[in-house]
Amino acid sequence: MPDAQGTPLRRSGRPGAAARLYLGLDSSTQSLTGIVIEVAGDEARVVLETSIVFDEVLPHYGTEHGVLPRADPAVAVSSPVMWAEALDLMMARLVAGDVDMGRLAAISGSAQQHGSVYLADGAGARLASLDAAQPLAGQVEPLLSRPVAPIWMDSSTTQECAAIAAAVGGPAVLAARTGSRAFERFTGPQIRKFAVGDPDGYARTGRIHLVSSFLASLLAGRDAPLDPGDASGTNMMDLTTAQWWTDAVEATAPDLARRLPAIAPSSSVAGRLAPYWRTRHRLPAARVIVWSGDNPCSLIGVGLVREGRVGISLGTSDTIFGLMKAPRVDPGGTGHVFGAPTGDYMGLTCFSNGSLARERVRDAYGLSWAEFSRTLDETPPGNDGRIMLPWFEPEITPPVLTPGVHRFGLDPYDAAGNVRAVVEAQQLALAIHSRWMGVRIDTIHATGGAAVNDGILQVMADVFGADVYRSSVSNAAALGAALRAWHADEHADGCPRSWDAITAGLAEPSRRGRIAPDPARHAIYRELLPVYAACEARYLTG
Ligand code: XUL
Image (cartoon, rainbow, N blue to C red; front, top):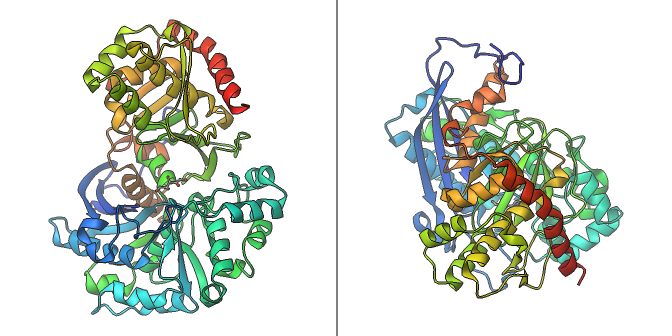
């Protein structure tokens, strides 16, 4: 049977086989979520979904929203021991439920990107012989050469970023080779800060894992590789070879190469569930599939497995992300390219003035969300040429350090004009700053809190000239991890299934709720795009 692209759709090689279970875990900043899917023939359904919120369930670590207490707001660290304890609790919770976990075929996972875990020399070997009679946390603690893990919210490495970029030939060279210029939260600059600031601790370190490969290693009972999706968040992976780029590794810290895990394709098997899990939680010898970062996993979890489809997440920040067949890089320097679990690439651009900007406008005019939506519906597309640059807070894309809201032909007292202006500004900026991906966007899967708003999604459809579908997936990263486990398990059995078939049932939004672009309104926005870009340029160049 051909799929919509005309390529043969390969069916499972296991017709009639007993229903198998796949577990997807997502170790995010604030919680560990598990989703179990059951696959029978070609059908997949979610049979279990549960979360452990770190602050609430593991209060003895003293985290606030998953971050350890901090004196310096630029420094953000968390506890690898807490993540290990959550994993132990999660498995106990899963086997205590109604689902027969004896049918578990494979596990994969997603983790917050960029965070790093420092293991002492010899820790990898000790992972194989953990004592099933003892909890995991107490056994992991002595394996660490650094008790805390810097995470993606850390912004304390500006100096290290500059040093690394300079050593490899400048920010543009680093971006062209690794997919991103140096960012404070990326792992390379974080490792450099540790190596320089605590040379003894660095000397004791035998392996530096990312959160993803650390947790996969605990499950497999041995050092697990990183996948290209998460390794591309280090500023050290060569995008085209999906291997460490020696120049960047050497520019980061001395003698670092031997401390880094191997990089292996996302569909690789890291091993079987280690004896610890089989004895302590009576789980089967399921395959442990290499973990990835939360953004690459979300790509799968919202069904973005073809070029031309992008996801737009309207949350605290707004993010646009999508699959790319070729590793194009953002010349503006704010976008990222990561490896995609499909073996392709993914582009991602993040805007800090998302919900926050919408809320600031709503509050400024004392509107409810219903009134905000009604006002949007009642104003003309294109806002009669009136434009707002909605930089209520410092903006990531384009880079704006000093916040400020700038209005062009727009009266600050005109509530209706400002409501439309903020929504249009955000969609125009999303369209302009995703052009570097070189993808002709025909379909958008919208997620996040503000995706409930039809008016906003209509502006999105009209600006992009693309069909918009609302995604109903709430834990996209965990679901993506479960789907990756399914995909990799069938791949390992020699009967691979297409990504379209893997994502068709659970990840793809219903085609019924299509929000179609209006050609006349799209024409208005096509004319407005260069005008908006010129307004931005005026403030960026001062
Ligand atoms: C991506 C990033 C965040 C974290 C959040 O570059 O820093 O999305 O992955 O978990």
